Image 1: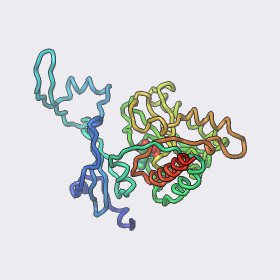
Image 2: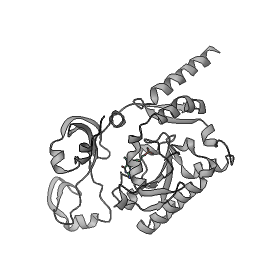
Image 3: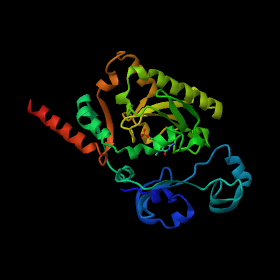
Image 4: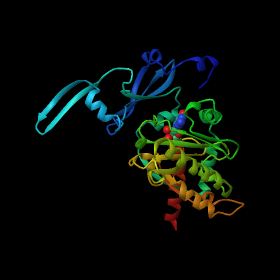
Length: 321
Ligand code: G7M
């Protein structure tokens, strides 16, 4: 896909642009979250729009029930059970009805990510990392992480940054795209390392322990100060495989119990990672670079086919002996 200066002037995320959205198909829907991903085109480029009803903030709910409703349509009356549809009052302090997310222009990788697909478990040995995964990571064009550099250099989302430590050993802590910063029980932050040489947990070395400890300390302090969320309410973890290869840590309220990104195999507790690094040699490869990782991948993921082919080959080999 080619970008021109004109493209960067176009606004995709405003009402006038969305009116021109050329819908193609629904990629995915979730009855659990009441949301769907739509694929279409905006300004001639492929776009994904995620449409979701906003979550109700428990602290705002009593006010909504008492005086925030415009109308009530009772469709079930069977004492003691009643069900109704309600419309919220409009007004300056009205709550948003929808949380909308847009990816524009989106790539085939985004489309595959949001297309339902079977998931399969694979084991990535250090050899498979060296021969398949590392070249795959190295082949990512730098534009794919342009948004990450824009954050750590303070050009984007600057007003959302919660904590920033400068220098090569620094990091930026800010709310994740998924969290609107409202309900503490939905708290979701991301800490992004400044050092682009750490692409995933495979690149971590013992020398990175101070960085990881600093991220942990900042996350605990910021969450306690700003939202009264205590250390014991926070889960800090790292994805492998992640969706982008610039090291980052997820900081998530423990009340988020059932997110796919927390599946065993994909999520690794920051505490465990620090522990493995502390057991690693001062100089030289860490345990994280020498161990095998087992995780599930969608069958459309760019790594799935090459890894699965190698594993099948090895399984055939075992059969012969
Ligand atoms: O699976 P992985 O560890 O790569 O997770 C990436 C995280 O980055 C997800 O939780 C996304 O919601 C988050 N994220 C992705 N983008 C494109 C952005 C962004 O533009 N801003 C922020 N703040 N978070 C993002």
